[in-house]
Length: 371
Image (cartoon, rainbow, N blue to C red; front, side):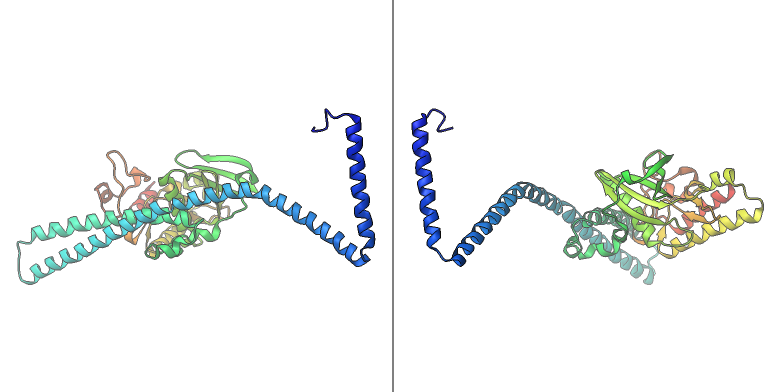
């Protein structure tokens, strides 16, 4: 461009000057020993490689910087759930201490023959209800932290009281390479709070249960069910194959039960004898017994949550509203109990803040038997 307006004489003189300079350096190189010339040539090649590497580095710096910025922003999001857990944990610990004091005061009153201790009894009951509700909040905070700790394992060290290493049992089943597009021949089994599909992977029929993990409540339910299924491995509990997260969706890959849930089983492969019905229901009861021995209450036992495999084996499923020993508290609203099925709900759970117990599950199982 600078020579676009130059005349031919000027360009000719410039060419002569360049030729003269080139001839000068050729003479200088001719006077150098051969090994020095080879060293200079090697140096030139090395410089070219360094230049190429720098160009590649420059090309990588911008996206790497953007990634680092995004990663830093994500790490900042660790602080709120961490602080929320610590606040809830302290509140629960304080209420547990107050409950201990209230129980001790009631024990002393009874020991000294104080028959007028109704106020103390009411205080114990009220404090216990508050403590149970606080424990439920702690569980929600722990599960929110556990979901974060899948990507930020250092949270397990930062919040030792949360025992995240125990909570994220589902982490062993998490697949970083699986995606929804890898599954074929989809058939929708259920559309509701969660989408359940029967799909094929590598020619094997499995079930995908989808959670919208962008919402806090769904994220907790997703992690809770994955955690429960890994914790409660048993021949009569549905098998969790793996877990994967894609965009704002979390997926559980579960074993496929060819005969469906109990109602579908009665339609697709009606048992020929009364004994076959008894066998399947006994298996479901063994699964429920295993769940209770592990300190968990299912909280939603019904025919639609007991599946039958092609081999005629009963499988207990759907643990996203289950409770463990520390947090057996009912979530109550004016019309329903969140996530549970009212026709199979034990009567005591209609009261606000009433603890769910194995007896609650057995009541629901009794109704299932009756149906």
